[in-house]
Image (cartoon, rainbow over all chains, first blue to last red; front, top):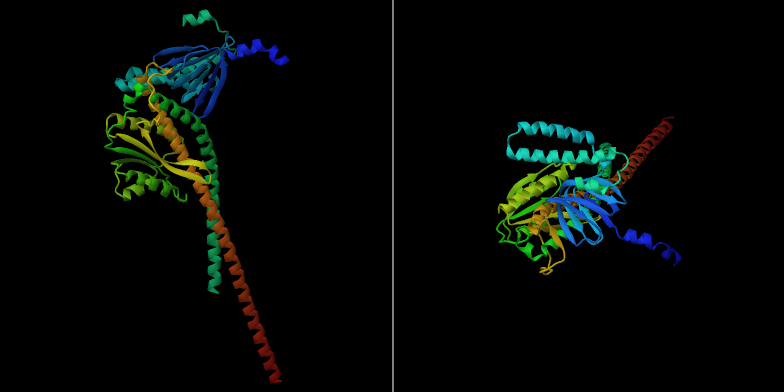
Length: 163
Length: 289
């Protein structure tokens, strides 16, 4: 009993978090608690705070941002589905990469190659496909540069508003 | 004497076959381990996606969507997953029989067959094979499944096929596999009544959500079915190789004991001949002196 009384404040704080699970074809990839999540849907960004109404969203290709205790983590997530409930968010996606898993050199190479070919290419659908590739490369570069900052940066409200 | 030589030859044959069997057994069991982990990893996402897709299908508005609304089934596409190689017991026979059984229920079938075993089977029966995939390397299964999913969606959207079925072998455990035929499109929503009003919202809207989700769902369904089938194939091969190994061992034992008996008999015969002749010689000598 004494123990239970000693921790209520902390437990409340814990309870008021989102339980995030990311599932990929390689199994459960990521479980984490978060204060806020910002994800890229097919038609724009979607922010989720605890207590969200039940929502199922189709995800687009983009940066998946997790904020917990003022720390921001970034993942590269390409497509998939987000199932959002009161306190849980489940992501089902084919690709979800952590910064340390991204092959930065390869992404940079993809970017250079695609940028060069887009200028030459005239076929409409080819260009569209290349743009997708470029988009993916840019996301990977952005997410992996997050790793280079070594320590995850403190999350500041103003900074977010700028973006 | 020639039968002794023959026996020796047979023993040599059986033992070299046994070595082959052992090698195949080892290959199958290592492959089994790999595909089994892959299968166990893909199952959760598949199940969850299936649940989400079914849930979305309960929405009143989804019922009219092309992926959910059934239409008159003029042409049915069957995706049949078989193996490229034999030595896997009844694995291929079971799945093609199951698929054939399903097609014979008055379906106008078009077949996408994976694996040369299934291809030979349906070709011999003059079935309408519209595409075959043979010798798909393991490493390409994932992207291959994605490409097939897109191809299937194209066929379905253009109205070339009105139903899509998949025939694969479900992996229960190493000793039991269940061949099954499931409908992929239009999506099976179960018997639950449609929801007129639900708390859950879909982003950006239900139709766009479905358009985005179904390709992913099909991709995962196919990848999972491939993994199931592949796991069964390796397990079946491992089991049948085990069985064959045991048979070979028994046969070898029998042959060896037969060989030994013959050899002994031959020696005994030779000995008795020698004894016989020496006795005669002895007697003959006695007689002479």
